[in-house]
Length: 66
Image (cartoon, rainbow, N blue to C red):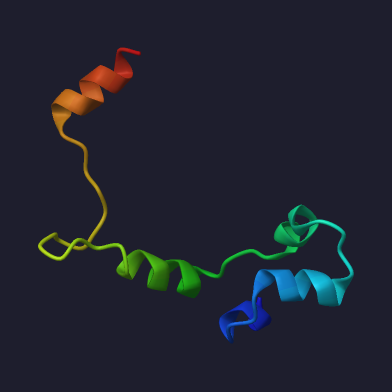
């Protein structure tokens, strides 16, 4: 995880570990909460409001009916 934090590419980490497949490497590369928060900050729309999505009652009723 520390290597990801400093910007080392996942493919390079896989090579260093000797993994044949990137799928094997992904098992060990769990994003930290800090990394997830930084990624979410980048997805906030320009005119949007930051925070958690709250679906409206109509959508919830539809989903419950499935």
